[in-house]
Amino acid sequence: MKQPTFKRAINKRSNFAKNLQNHFAQTPRKNLQKNAKKRPLTFAETIVVLFNKPYDVLTQFTDEQGRKTLKDFIPIPTIYPVGRLDRDSEGLLMLTNNGELQHRLSHPKFEKQKIYWVQVEGVPTLADLAKLEKGVALKDGLTQPAKAKTIAKPHYNWQTAPKIRERKTIPTSWIELSIYEGKNRQVRRMTAHIGFPTLRLIRVGLGNFELADLNSGEYRILSESEKRKLFKQLGLKDE
Image 1 (spheres, one colour):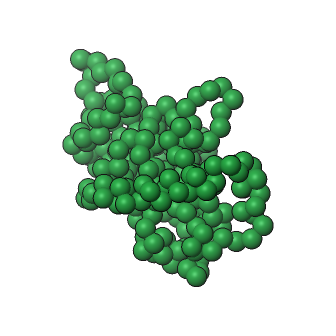
Image 2 (tube, one colour):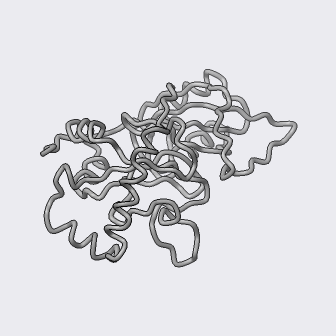
């Protein structure tokens, strides 16, 4: 995958994010969600955020047990996750304040490719990867055809990365797996099914968006042009 740089975009939008935070700081999240449901948001009112979720962070904004949540990283109280990313997984997560956009992104009609870089225990052969591509039989059904290939070890050595216990007698390797569906813990179950347990899981692509060099715990707000392309893709009016 190409690794375009978004650092300039992040810096340019940091002030915008701070303004959003100040604007909504005094308004409870529940009230904001209730008000957002009264009428569809316009293109200008819509906020779409890409976030690099660290390991051990819940894909929600509150938690009664005091675990880390999105609130610890994103100071915009009007947005909600599109889909989910498990606590023990890392990488790209999209959030928005637009309920209709959130609904369409989650609907099977607008299936989007999700790309994962997966560290597994062992070294899969081409025959093993072919099984993933063809589809494997899980308890909740046969997975759809996927794309799988071996890749070099990525450079994502964030401080928040999980500590992987590697055994001398069993090597580890990395694969890239692209899927279009979202069964519960699907990637982990797929690799386990063919005999290669997942040790680390990073989502690096979501639809037309890539993780690139967005650091762990960082987020960026889509530019107007990026947002316009997304609206067009989902059949929404950009007015």
